[in-house]
Length: 89
Image (cartoon, rainbow, N blue to C red; front, side, top):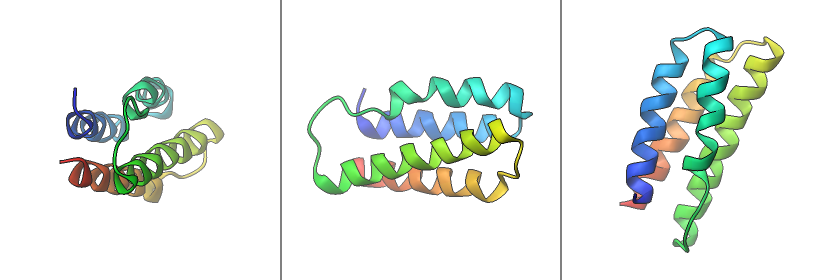
């Protein structure tokens, strides 16, 4: 699976998880870790975008775990993943 395909699946999962309560969304986010990991050398811009998406997803997970508002964090994670997908093409 290409990075672009992985990013598309991650976006799809993020949008689905965003509509769920925290106890349902957290396992979905945990399942994305393998999708966001690099498995080959990519241009620096792609790697930076992938890393940003990973960190943004982690921030959402931390907020959900703590029970703090995550509305803006969801948008940031989706935006970062869309950027990763656009650069990975």
